Image (cartoon, rainbow, N blue to C red; front, side, top):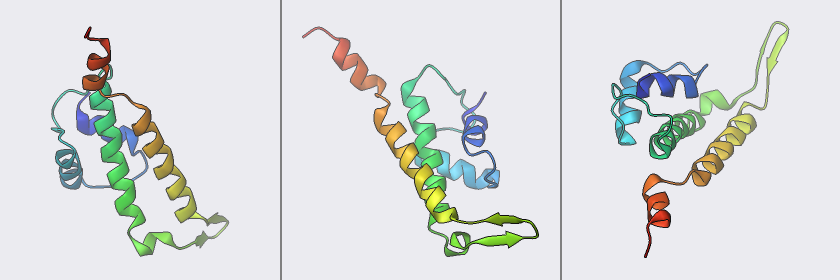
Length: 109
């Protein structure tokens, strides 16, 4: 699996063209065609940061912050739910130790 495939998995349901996803990945020091390494906490953290950037950009769009009603389906509180997801991702990112930090803790003085 590549980084862009993993990012698409993390942002399932959010439709963004691949050219924009490439920019988001590059902004977070990831190359789209590089292999995603699930055992790398740094790689995982960068994917989550990239997904967070996407959600924050969606939150900055006023047109997505209104309530919608379509026939028998009502989509309300989008902004609140989006902010909750952003908060969850931020917490998850903070909890992931970077590999550099982990190796410092394991090295003898």
